Length: 455
Image 1: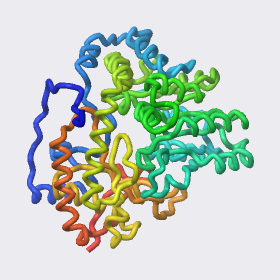
Image 2 (image 1 turned 180 degrees about the vertical axis):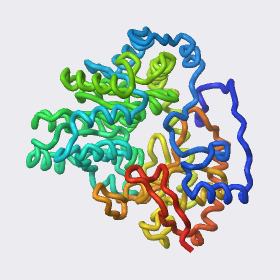
Image 3 (image 1 turned 90 degrees about the vertical axis):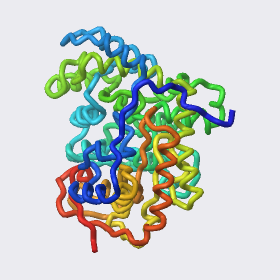
């Protein structure tokens, strides 16, 4: 059929509080023009993130009732461990309360001054956890990944030539290589199996472990099925297992491709690193069989891992994102192309050329979307990535605004409303002001920084 329907029925609804534009102007001003500071009740369509915002299924809610809260050795942990290992056969699976906790533990072990962690593109918390140890986070995405208009099918690929140069010249400073799948900071772009395999071979050549930041592993696998020769007839489950067969470890936020509202894990094969990780886990997160999570959360993750690889769900997921992306493209909104699997990324730098990068065109666009229609989005540009570890500031490679789509939450009419808001925004875009930062924390400033418009 031409119409791809939601592969679920809605059993519970949550009312939205309707607001006026005048109210929203006041609310965003009181929030110091930072959308993270808004009360969620004051947001109509929340596209800030797809992390922890999914609607859980009846099977997940049912599993939650089975959650066992034993401090050690809970059966909920063993069901969680089996569900992870069915897709990602690592020797050690260590639960954490979310993905950044796994990153913190991993880079506390392998990071430190003088160390270099290369990736296709590190996302914000990954970079911050690396730099907090004194190590250097290096992005090596292919050139097409830095070109918003390129339609390369796998713009998340790591640049193998640049990676080999780094490994050949500085091998002793590289404790591991990391691939982000899909490449969130680069527009939600996938990494091909060919690139994953070649990265694995390169890491083996130089004796360096390969880790995945695997928050959206199922979406990456579905892109491989759709776009990479030789995979059309393979199941997503098989593709996922092949992807992870090339890795030595992973960090995971279960708040993305496991449909959970909280949770994550660190998985790896190295016995010594695993022992260190468990020691750190006990200090900060909890016993190794719960890792900062309730047993009910472990149960929800176990069910979510089975549901996320269902291909009818993935077809609907991609169709939803494409529906929004194609509509915006038709009206002339510049996007990161091709549209990714979990979000539509608007090229704010191109849409608002009158606003210089260090007056934050992405922030200007995000504020305007909220004022016009109550839509909350996320700047991924010079606010998020413009500040360097030494405190200096320079424009980020891309000035984007991410419209992240929560899983199983919004219907087509919600997307039609977002499209209509963009029609109004296009009429007003040339009058939008830039912004300056009037206060910021030393790290991850985009979460809590305060802004004011530049007259």
